[in-house]
Image 1 (cartoon, rainbow, N blue to C red):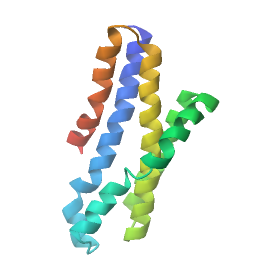
Image 2: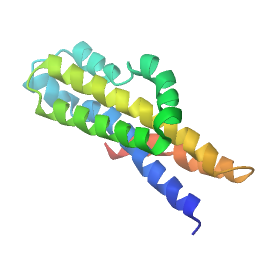
Image 3: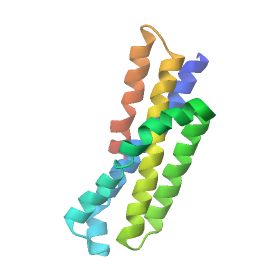
Image 4: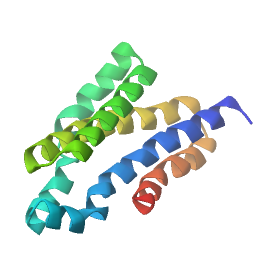
Length: 146
């Protein structure tokens, strides 16, 4: 197997964690509503906070990849996702849960911007269509795994 296909598998697995983490709150939603006495509106807002950093982090994320290297920023994204997920899991109230979702979402944006760019760096011509198809299938796979 060519090295670029191994890289694609690694990038796809990393991106799968985005979908899994996005859907994780919805998957345990009824438990959160009951345990923390949340309304379903608050639960929906908590889910949405994961996407909020996209507005502010996407463009600087591309610049950070150019400045410090794609791999480093992808690893930073994964670290932020891990830290945010840990904060969310350890939270006993709503405010730290929001913070965890925002931190996770910021990491996810960094990851998403740069793994897509990395696929375009590693693949060309007709192969890029297959490579992007594999990569883009990772989000729904992660959601299904949650």
